Length: 137
Image 1 (spheres, one colour):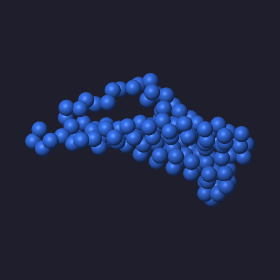
Image 2 (cartoon, one colour):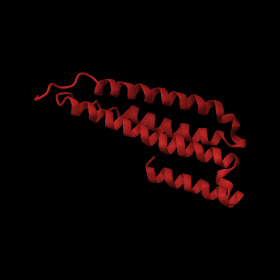
Image 3 (cartoon, helix red, strand yellow):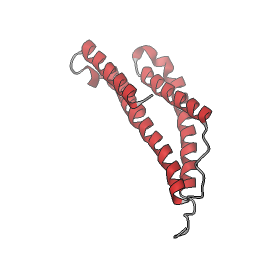
Image 4 (cartoon, helix red, strand yellow):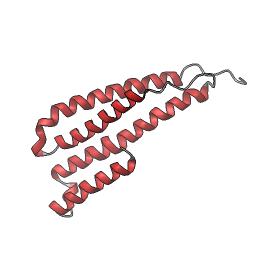
């Protein structure tokens, strides 16, 4: 989901909370929890993770020009993107009183996505922090 889509979603939910519960609606109760998940895990978390994935791949290439860029993995990338978006949505929904049954599945999906992204980030970081190219080469 692009940044504009995430922003529009958060603004729409905050607007709905305001219309339903008044001016303080987005800052109290269930609405606060839902918006916090969408903002922190969804917007900030996924944006920072995506930037790290991109920058670590480039850093490895800059440090050693003979090193090829990491092999594209479009299937894995689509799977992890869909999983991450689904995890954030399920986690946000699980914060509402009507959807408490989603707490366990959302937690399992979130931890799975975090584990997969962590493995990818650790691999890229190890590659980027490997031996640096010799000066003048």
